[in-house]
Image 1 (cartoon, rainbow, N blue to C red):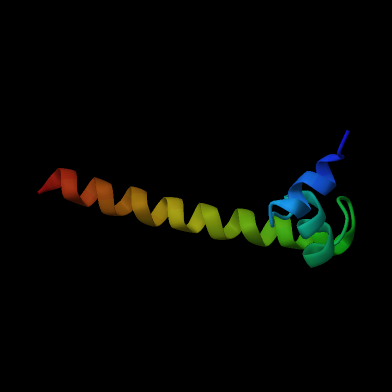
Image 2: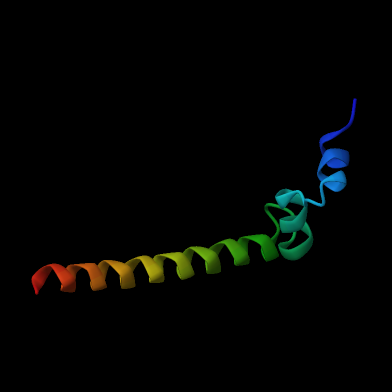
Length: 60
């Protein structure tokens, strides 16, 4: 039986957990935690921007 890693490789796919580990460090490391905090800030900023736009549309 093939492993999950072998199946992904055969299909030209990448395991997202492995990619995150390579790009941003293993979970719990300072590098990974810094990335998570920056990602949270980025997403929250866009959410608030979208909320503001939607609330302005409703008022018109």
